[in-house]
Amino acid sequence: MEDLYHHINGKRVSGGSDRFGTVFNPATGETQARVPLASKDEVEAAISGAAEAQPAWAATNPQRRARVMMEFVRLLNRDMDRLSEALSREHGKTLPDARGDVQRGLEVVEFCIGAPHLMKGEFTDSAGPGIDIYSMRQPLGVCGGITPFNFPAMIPMWMFAPAIVCGNAFVLKPSERDPSVPLMLADLLVEAGLPNGILQVVNGDREAVDALLHNGMVQSIGFVGSTPVASYVYATGCANGKRVQCFGGAKNHMIVMPDADMDQAADALVGAGYGAAGERCMAVSVAVPVGDGTADRLIERLVPRIETLKIGPYTAGEDMDFGPVVTAEAKQRILSLVDSGIAQGAELVVDGRDFSLQGYENGFFVGAHLFDHVTTDMDIYRQEIFGPVLSTVRARSYEEALGFAMNNEYGNGTAIFTRDGDTARDFTNRVNVGMVGVNVPIPVPLAYHTFGGWKKSAFGDLNQHGPDSIRFYTRTKTVTSRWPSGLKEGGEFHFKAMD
Ligand code: NAD
Image (cartoon, rainbow, N blue to C red; front, side, top):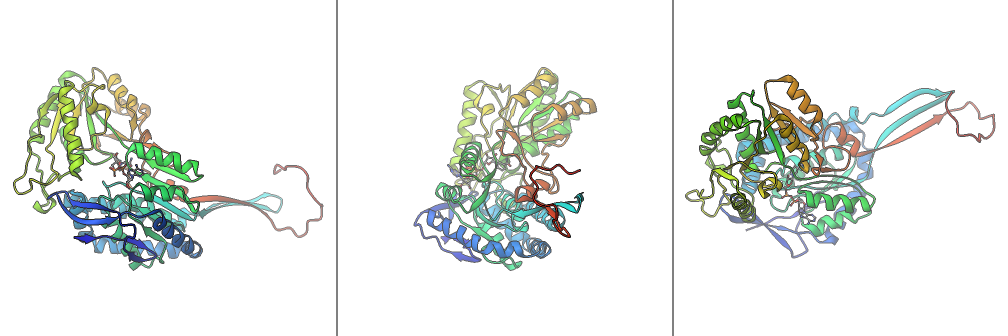
């Protein structure tokens, strides 16, 4: 069995804590590696290395920093197959989906190549007699990031690419479930010319997270994961005086109006509900058809599509629709939520509980499930299931459907399927959710826009990637400057307004 490592100061470093996590192959259920769980001392050593390296990197001109990102993009494309295979092996998602995971991170790296332009400040010439005012964006220093298992390539890149290109050093604590790809990314950045110490990868669990949160050298924390941990990280990081952005869980509703193209809506729901086995924060987990007629027409189209989904290991070919979930515990939790749905009175229209795959009986596969007549007091509605389970909540009117999305505690993504522009416009204006799709089921914005939810899906006030990421990873300094031919008037005693 392979022992994984940390990536510190450009080198692979074995774990010294004697604590390890297990990395599974979710398709077979086999253990394929041990990941070291860093001690507080190991995290502190990584932070110190980053702090030592950062000033010289910040002093490197932004164009040169951007060139490292340019080369990194080339290497990501070169190694796309190798990265995707490693990602599928630890996460379980299909190969095309794993490629998408790398690609969506790569696109943020491409955006970051524009940093010399994006970091440009503001300048006011002659704000007063002989006085200029200018603002510049300067790096924070050492930044920290804690990432989830479900996008082990994309989310680390969303964080460290903007942080690094802005002149910071970054200490990444990836998910202990699938840590290999983040380690491979760190190797590629060394190959791309990144100085040692600017990206540190420390593997670990809560002990490593706490070490980052309590270290005075760490200026900012980015977190993506479940809401309870997001809220803990946000509160602790803020209490320790850090700049913090935390992105949490989700319960994404897709409203289907009576005038929607029902085949298009059904296709969209199947892809968005079951893709990646539902382990996406932007997965649609709640379908909200408006009116019983709409619900019946939708369910009628959903059932055959769901029953013929291809579920299998990533090695079975590119046409698999989804793979296993990440661990045996995740599988158990999903199945017990399905049982609770039945016990609480929802109608299980497609039952995937007996799903099993010959030759992969020990894998963490979960069949596809569809519930109808779900109500908002049920556990399957109230909890994020993070599995291949779609719940249908029937609404009597558009206003009731909108209310379901608005009253839900999460606000990551939502969508409406309709042919009516006025309804779509009203929905996009009023809904209190961060990312909205109109006839688009998973409205994940591209790299040059920003990504972030509302309500309990995000804590902090700036989004991920796009222009917000440059703001998050820099602080503004504003200079008021006068180059006098001579200060002849003597001291000034009033707080002056410019005239
Ligand atoms: P998780 O919260 O279990 O873990 C996320 C990270 O936090 C990991 O690195 C983990 O090691 C660490 N962690 C776990 N428990 C901790 C604790 N008690 N104290 C400190 N650190 C801890 O999440 P996950 O299961 O890896 O990921 C799935 C969750 O992430 C889902 O809720 C999903 O919706 C969410 N997610 C959100 C977004 C978004 O942008 N909003 C994106 C992807 C995933």
